[in-house]
Image (tube, rainbow, N blue to C red; front, side):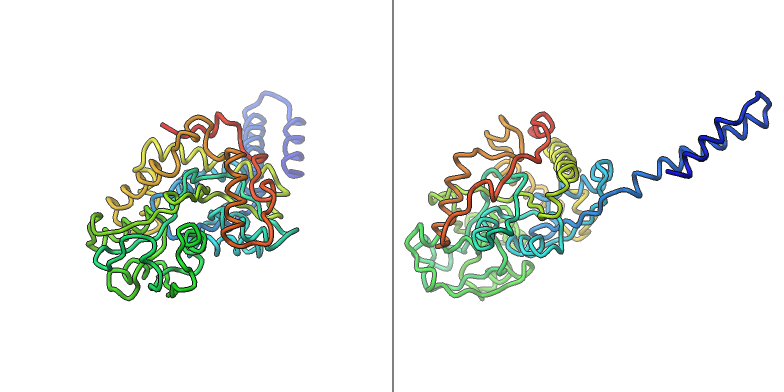
Amino acid sequence: MIGVTRMLSNCARMTGTGPTRRGLVGAALAGAVALAGAVPAAAQTPIKFTLDWVFQGPTSPFLVALDKGYYKAEGLDVTMDPGQGSAGAVQRVATGAYDIGFADVNSLIEYNAKNAGKEILCVFMAYDFPPFGVHALKKSGIAKPADLAGKKLGAPVFDASFRLFPAFAKKTGVDAKSVQHVNLTPQLREQSLVQGTVDFISGHYFSSILDLKARGVKAEDVVSFNYSDYKMDVYGNGIIVSPALAAKPEAVTGFLRATAKAWKEVAANPALGIAAAKKRDPLIDEKLETERLDMSLRLNVLTPFVKQNGMGDVDPARFARSVKDVAEAFDLPSAPEPDKVFSAKFLPPKAERMVAP
């Protein structure tokens, strides 16, 4: 800024109407403007952001916000990486390796209950309705939750639905300890079910059902137990921030404003999201990802609550109940206070969060 100030000062001392003088003034002013325009880029806040899973349609709004410069316009230099599960995303943010993450809020409840004084905050709820569940093939003979006892469960160790399985088992009377866990990478999860090396898998509904479809499995040949159908009224994924970034509220709010703007655009035109996802992963099946994105929007994001109140916030009473239910299901020593898990203070105004078309 010192160089800009001096240049403008020199301009002010240039007087006269001759063409040479006017040219000098014009050149000086142009240089000053160019330098001034470079300042915001130099002053941008670096942000490392981790997803919970691989690049797919449902999380494509983050990519749209990045590609269209919405984060940059908020003064943020965002880098984005895929993940291997929500619990892993929580750990990445908790260790300070990442500033922001997209993660299952229930994994966050568990982490915060076990790490008093080092809590991580969820600042934006994305999945108002949860997508968690376990899935099997009909030919396995699994027809009801009780049939899961003694079977092999294939799941990445950080998968949100896997982390919540003990809670589901408790609700349905299944002995979780009788279930053998087979640790799988995200890429091998559905394939292992098809090959029969595991009896059932855990995963977001829109992820597992469509990934099985991509492997030739018909929807009618899949048995799904969605946790929400068994009195697990919990929330889904949200945006979480590190304590260090929470100390920069303008940066957090800017990230949320840019994200909400992109989500609104993708909800109105899903093709934008699919194009952004394909840019990151050219091998994705566009038709499949379009279906996955549509499913997540209809079932998890654009709920009646979100259409009325805007995306990002929670119903305080429902959220408080969910914190207690999760703490009880996980056999945690105590439930963290709801305001130690979620905070609405960073949210942009409601008008900027009305994302439904």
